[in-house]
Image 1 (cartoon, helix red, strand yellow):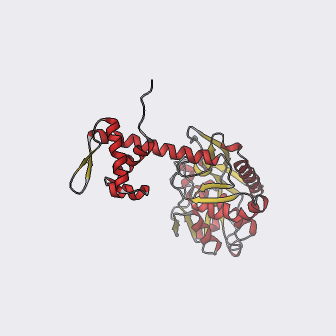
Image 2 (cartoon, rainbow, N blue to C red):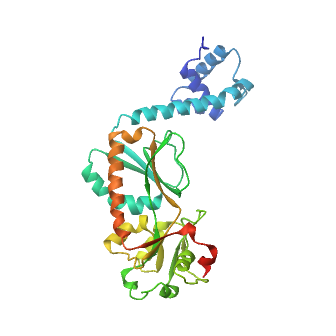
Image 3 (cartoon, rainbow, N blue to C red):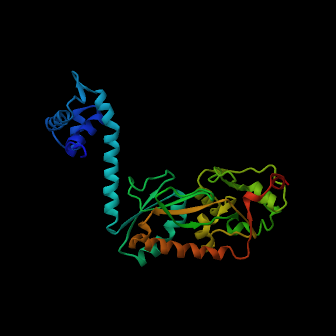
Length: 322
């Protein structure tokens, strides 16, 4: 016969008091009086048959039994809260929360949201633009879009709904195209550096692109940006030429605000992964967003026509330096 657990309200009172090490602060968090909270903890101690706190003059300390119970109690309530949120999400309430990096959100998702909203007015989209890895169960996330190495795998319990490829090529303001008509001429151009994917083991650099064209580029200088969208914005203003990422520059290329005049493009060994909890991909709101996303991604293929794609990870160091 399983051991009878104490009342959930008493455990909740203990967990809050153990976190704060203050009955008063715990009572304020739970919106009860300190006397009511103290009564709940007292009943829990009676259930256990041992004290969980040492009551000192103006503070409390956990006993050995209290310390043993604290972490499991905290984890248990976090798990319950996550399960409750997951259960509510299955109801498809009309709210869909998507997390993606700030640059992808600003440059890819935001310019397209009007079309999604027109097609699905019943769905309220919410975005968490962050590079921090959010937790589906605790952060109320339905879909995550993350950029990373192509050999990375989805965590257990997650469904890989889609992969969005990436490639890079020089991009510039239309006014600069005539001034820099050949790959060699870019050696004289103001160069803009996008350092946002420098974390990749086989990253892509200006030296790689010049090397793939058989051009030695030893001493390149220019402003460095840690955020890809800032580098794209700088190129779009006419400040220089950026080795731009298709995913983030596609809208600007389509509108003619940026031009990518050279055929050679480098493909990093990385892509965007679109992830959902397993089973969630079939929910109506999630499915609607994934179908819309796939259609929008397919439109990017127009920019690939006529280009010569080279796997950046296959470039040998000697070739890069030539």
